Each structure stands twice: as C-alpha cells, then as structure tokens.
Image 1 (spheres, helix red, strand yellow):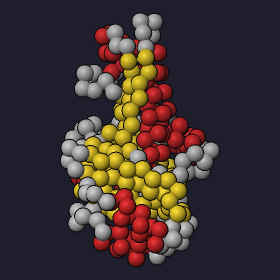
Image 2: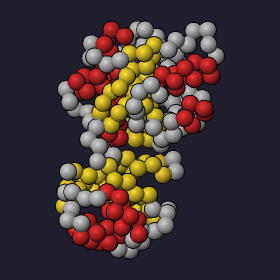
Image 3: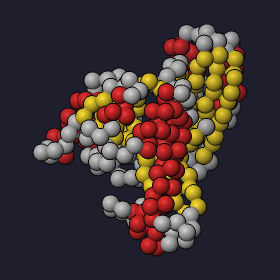
Length: 276
C-alpha cells in the first residue's frame, strides 16, 4: 500500500533522521521525500511517499512523540479525492478539468458540478456527472449561498473548485469550507477590475497576461497562492486575442493547482504556501 506522510512543524535538528528511523522500524520503504525549512519563521515541512503495510494510528502516535508540540502530522492513503466544482457560464476552465478527469489525469472523483445558470448542463452531462443548478434570481446573496451550501453537502467532498464561478463569496461560505476552496482569476488584479479587464489591459498596452490559482479566504482574491503562470503578448494582439490567451493560461493554471492539491503537495502557513 502507498501512503503520503505530511509533516508541518517548528524546525529543530534531527527531524529527518528521527522520522526516517521510525519509518525504518515499521518496515516502510521511502519512495520519495521532499523537505523545506523557512528559516525566517523556523518552520519545517516534509512530504514523504511510503510503501508497505502499517497500523496507521500507531505510526502517527510514534511520529508525533518525537516531533515538537506544535507539529501537524497527516498520513494520507486515499488514492482519489472527492471534489465538487462550482461554475457559472464560462466553459474553458470547467471543460479542461472534465477532459483531464475523463482521461484519468486527475486523482479525483468529481461528485457534481453546481452552477447558478443552466448554461453548462449539457457539457457536464456528457461526462455522466451530476449537474445541479441553483439559480440566484430573486434571492439575496446570503440566501443563494445557503442553497449552494446545501447543494454541496448533498455530496461527498474534500475540495471545492471554483471554475470561473462569478459570484463573490461571503465570509459565511468561506468559513463553512475552510482551506477547501480553490479559485482561479486573471493576474491583472488590482490594476484592471470589472467586467472586461482584457479590454482595459489592451488599452494600456500590457505585454504579459497571467493567471493565479489560490485558496479562498475572506480577503477577496488574496488567499495563499498555489500556482501562477504567464504568456507574453505584443502590439499585434487585439483585446479579443488577449482574452483568448488569458483563458488558455487560466485553465492550465487551475488544473495544475488542482493536481497539486489532489497529490497532497501543498502546505499552508500564514498567507503563503509551500509546494513539495
């Protein structure tokens, strides 16, 4: 059996040796190991892929015993994580995830797509995935969000992916799913905001277009960043060309970030992430 061991703790001498010694004593084989120390805050992070058979509770107890008191330790055995996707009308990010899912690229079970419009229903049902429309028409933001929360909780989920879900989430929603919501947006913020940032960027003659995938927090579009990328543009690009380039980088960055989360490669601390 394969396990992923995640350790987040204060740094001190001998951590890698002490953990490895316990793994050896349990007869586990280390297939892959990555570590990082943030010396500014004295934080140690470790991700280890293991193989073998073990009593998980006993192993965790022994590892915690040799770590500092503030240590967070997780042993993951699940091969695939359950996810729910939120969407509105745009197809590029959702479509990319669905295709990767269909081809077996993602270690995920997509339990449902929840949207506030019916626009994407036909696309989703082509992949035999439940589609739930929770219309926002005639509802306050709070009432609509409560209905969305109820819809999500009808399914098993570990992660919620915003595939261009064009609704600002309230603190209540974020608090309901702490450190479980992944979002994507263009990287023009905060310079160009509103309905058509690509047209604004075109008018300013930008030379780089990017996208940012991050955890959702109460600070709008300012949660811990997981993945980013850019594409170069020049004066020959119309604003429509820029928009198309932006959509392409958005879908790639979102899928890459989701893949990192599905593989338990991301640690959060403060408003930052460590990706191992």
